[in-house]
Image (tube, rainbow, N blue to C red; front, side, top):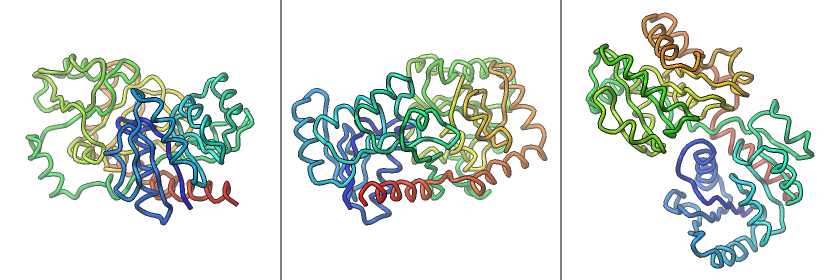
Length: 342
């Protein structure tokens, strides 16, 4: 079997991380032949054929799409309905869209997807019903967490990691990972650091890039790491005591799942599907979306050793109860490809 993937960008968080993980996972762990059209071929596994495309040369991108997808069995477009539109100009075979999230869910975008003939939509969960109600054939992939990468370090490895990052053994480390914008609540972690500036035991680390970057550079009350490659994030998750994600809404929180897979509790402020999936399981700790409330929630958890350990256990147990791993995501994608080629 030969599968083609069209994903212009693979760097970043959320759907892009999922897309990269699935593409490389299929290439590295199966016998499927993989060809990828992307603007970031360096992020694609050596086991796949990665072809660079660029919007600066749209004619070449069109020619490559037609040529490279001429003999594939299925094409998957993980992100953006307009990338699906572009592919459909040159490829008329079976097409999979999305990677859980990734395709715009508004009514007009769902209608466009139907007109483009998407054969299978990868959704986040069976509870996300808008796609099925719009006439799509769907298959859920809730998350793509690689447990060979994201796992809890043992005590010695964690201690060594913290020392390498210049963190004291007795420091309580609060971590933020994600885009630096207001939607993700980056300004809230910045305000938390200001509020806790007199507390020598609390240390704040911010990982990510975005519009609010300059708000985090050259500050004494937090450590700003900038963009960090996804495969290096377990170092930060394991060094931290708590990760925070002060978003308005969320679906699953890829950052949250990565953090709890490393044994580090995650505090969220998000509404949305994330509550339907995880609130009853107490996978995450919820707080009101203000700097004061998030900081107080973090402090309360850090001060209660028994509850902290219970929260770590709840998070890790979620992976035993739900299909959240890259391995399960790969199996689901293979099943979809098999169905479309029978």
